[in-house]
Image (cartoon, rainbow, N blue to C red):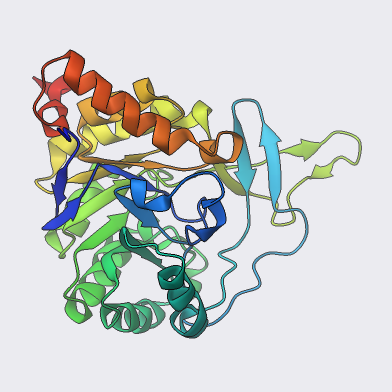
Length: 305
């Protein structure tokens, strides 16, 4: 009996486990470790309208219990994804749900990429990444400005019929208020948290290690912050949550679910343990059996009761 079967935004997931965008490529990269179809879904590498080379200089830096990255959304662009990557995913037998993470420098770019992915039947869910810098607003992230977050969510909602998940930035003073704003403007769900902003300095050169100076901080060290934010957002909105941020064990995943996440997303911990998602799926199934739960959904939000 599969106790992990999950219905999320009208889409059937064999379990509530997906991968975080940017940490799992397009799924094919991990086939030597396990069959990606074991997962409920794959959050593919972030897509933009045009190909991007990403940031220059050092892009990755390790920190205690985590890592920093400033990859800069390097990707081949939507045209290449459609013409080459998607056919290769099909050829390699990847049939699990695809979550397309979309990005832009302007609202107009977000709308354009959303229109494109809306026409791709293999994409089950669209994840709108509002942590991108808004070039028309002095480089401030879309998700850091409530009015801009509302606008980009609303404009994307107009052009896609697919389930729309808005990925929230933790680099704000009140993430619950941002969650409510995107809900009011058409988000079907939210995913959180994206990476925290951090930096590391090389004490020998006395300069920042990362080529972009600042980077996104992820890994086990961010988990308590992420769990707290999921807990807060669960109380503030009426739409489901994909929880992420530092998940490195079955116990971590259970915390997120109890805080209010209907789905969980595995990110940077995959780099040190490529089998982590499989281990968590097996562990969640065992937990349900041992605690006489018919379905994992019975645990969602139990920390609030």
